[in-house]
Image (tube, rainbow, N blue to C red; front, side, top):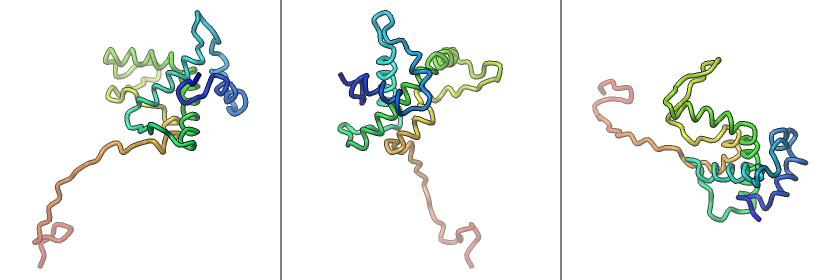
Length: 153
């Protein structure tokens, strides 16, 4: 059974066993806890985060090369979530209470950036990142002035 872009759980297990140098967070996930496989949950959450991320345009039918990139991003996002979802949830809780700064190191939260992906995942998804914004500027030229705004002679 496919789990997002990953063919099955065995594909993910193989990746973490053979291709990723560090897999402590993945290895710590409980195989079955109360009827839930945390590895599958991490992969599904990673898939959903990427699929719904602002500014990321995923094709309906990705090519083989695009699918390989999406799989890698999903696996790495699952690893990030395995290690940092709990911390992220705490920070989101603070942000939901409109806290803008907290903690021993005085973290500052940007409340206007919900649902952003970690920089490492964005780097893996670079070919899927769409233009974030277009700025339109009304330009008018005064024929009596040069480019520096000095009157023409």
